[in-house]
Image (tube, rainbow, N blue to C red; front, side, top):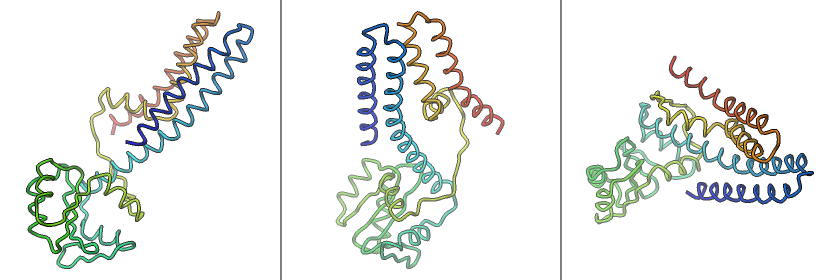
Length: 246
């Protein structure tokens, strides 16, 4: 959430500063060439700052998606996996196939479905300690209320916390688990939006299109703006064709 807010602020700041410089430099027509170069340079510097943060957020989202797919679609023994991963930082025990970390019993509910009322009840019945940690990807409101009402200390770790824990002990799965999905228009547009080179090209096309409004060489600017847009979407068309063949 913090990254999204920070990226949004960066985008607004870049937009405002770019237009301040743009209008300040274009007061005199004689400065047309220098103003164009300066405005584009400043815009690209600000854009690089925004894209670097956006790229980090995108990579983090990909790692989280891979982690989720790994637990859901890979036949892994969760007790063994977490016992081994967390043993480098915490005291772990896996007696009788049940994992304890320190003074807490760990119950796994890492599935496509949100943590349910029944999952919390199972964790309570099978506990080996009076402190329970339940790992899940998301939690139902009824399950949360039940956990808060039981006479034991229950901590629910959702997707973000599980990800941070494994990242902290450097145990994020390295095996890439890719799930084939349909490739609708929405995914196609997201593919363009997430591609770093496409962002740069589309931004350049936008800037050149703006210049076409004030330059006597309007057709020339519009032509190159359209040309950059086409170059930006070609990689996504190629990926779409490859996925359809696969």
